[in-house]
Length: 207
Image (cartoon, rainbow, N blue to C red; front, side, top):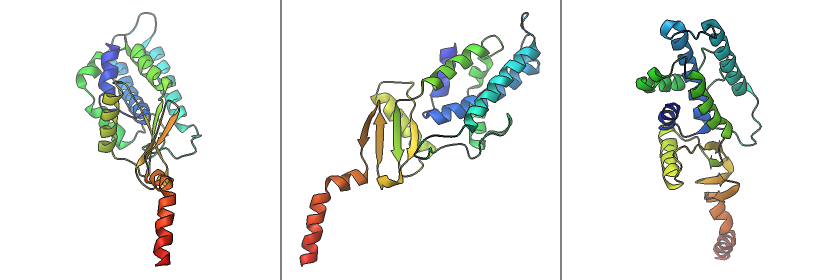
């Protein structure tokens, strides 16, 4: 059951950053659902105690989003504003949460909530071995296109990647996968053909 829920989330979630934001948004909605009388109360733990437990988890998630980034190159596709409270998520994230499978939401209750969260948190903690560097911030359709292609060709349906910006690439992109960096940018092509370009330029000047 928990794996089915994770698969549904990853169906249209391709970056690690998006997974973190959408998971946070989903947790907020589920917290309201579970603790507004829609679920039974565990005999060994009161509803109020469970609510406090989840609120601490959510607060911890938000705190991690507020933590300073150490990346040298700016991370793209971040929230327009870092959440300041449990009620603050971006419009884009809220729209995704709203469109998330109602059937799957119904399968999450106070009995399996912790297991579902633990599974998703495990994927987040594992991180990603793939980073794509762009000159521009890709839109959702571009991210989806890259994500589907990568999952198919790397045969990994749970693959997540990071998106970062490197304006020095001029055009194209670069990829870092499992510690190996491959540069498919215009900058790399220019560098590879630098000698030929310089010779052509000198020939032009001699005319």
